[in-house]
Image 1 (cartoon, rainbow, N blue to C red):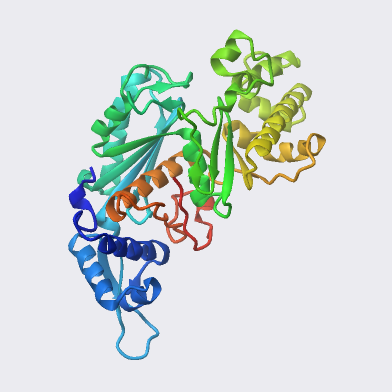
Image 2: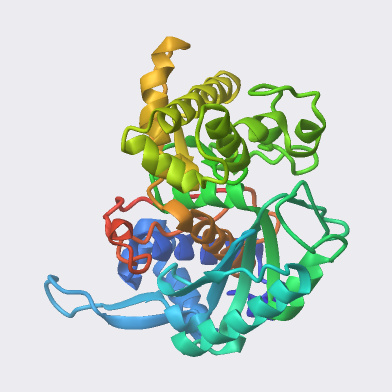
Length: 426
């Protein structure tokens, strides 16, 4: 767990010295290895202050010399960078059917990743499973447990910050009444943040996905359930109780007064996986057909399947127009198993002119099923940087490294160069 002694400066140090440390760290996060002379030029700090900050960061094991600057006349200068071995963060995506864990170093470099089906018994069985997966991931990557400084958990629903219990997550089994926040802190051995999985996916796309060039974005997940993550000027919209984005309860798509709509939400009943399967049967399709098979049959020209997917896209288009009218995000990203698998972004683009004259920029998720775990890593990394490098009363958050030099694992789409800018969210 990060403590006051882990900070890059003494808690009693003058505020100006604390600000100097933060300023230097921001340069390292954005530019990588930099010499002391260049740091002084970039930050406007004196050479003496810059040298003192570097000395302090070196003593605390947070910065290391990396070599010497090249292409200079005269004696070359020593360059410094954040020491990747100084610590690691863990992102955990806990879904109803799958668990994904990922490790990144303090610089945002990808260290390792695991994925497996979630134990169907849910509850304590899944918690025990996470404990074993965390131990396996640390062993496989060679990261010592003591190096794990911060974690973030992405999961459906809303966690009460007072009790740590989960609500608005009908697909999660056996977690009722469990203090999830306290439980995760104990089993992961570090401070933990819990975030809604769709919010986390939005952060992932904002950090290293199709939202990396946008100032604001809406991430719409269409899958077993549906949800919305919204970032405006880098700030997550959570609402008074943390339930902002629970779009499954929007009152259209089917009868909002029906008992099932009150439990799961009218819109989810219409375009969630169960609703799509039911619509397929009503269109003449075979009962018991999975949504994956319905999508595949639609692509092969099956009339009932095509009608089912087209009607789903029509209802989803009404959702997109609603989001655009209420929040006016710069970009809307469509994700989730159904959102990506059924080519919903393209179908919605084709349907939009029928009900809106406003141009709406829609993209399919670049990160796919990995968006929530990548977002969880970003959230954990952001909290770690704040705890280490930023005075508590300073407004605004440190930027996260965009990390174009750090691949996000084996998926080739993650290795695209996304530019050299850095991102901030809260």
